[in-house]
Image (cartoon, rainbow, N blue to C red; front, side, top):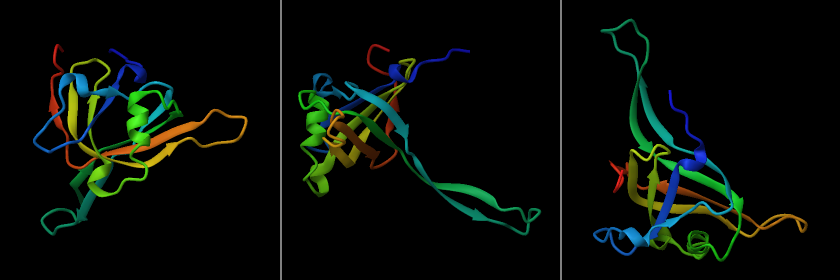
Length: 151
C-alpha cells in the first residue's frame, strides 16, 4: 500500500475571467508557500427516510456535495497565489471567484472547477508572531475529474 505525504497534493488557483475561458497552463498559481495546513471542509447534504418495504431503518441518500478546502499558514504578500487571494478580501459576489485545481499526491488525478474564496486572512496575529494567512476555497459545483497533463 502506497502512502503519500499531504505536501505532495497540489492546490492551485487561477484568476477567473469567464466561465468559458478556462485557465492556460501558465495561469495556475500554486498555493503552497508557507502553507502549513490544508483541511478538507467538504459538506454533504443528506436525506434520511424510512420505508415500509424495508425493516423501518432509515436510508441515507446523499443529495449534495460541496467540496471545500481551508488553508492556514503564514502570509507572504510576494507570493502570487497569496497576493491574489488577499486582493479578493474586499470584493463581493462574482469578484470572489477563482478557478481551483487539486492534483492528487500520486499525480494520477486532478479536479478543476470554479470556486469561491471566503474567510480570507492576510495578516493577523500577536505582535511577536509572523502574519497569518488563511482562506476557504469552495467549489461552486462538483469539480471535473481528469488525468493531469503529463500524468
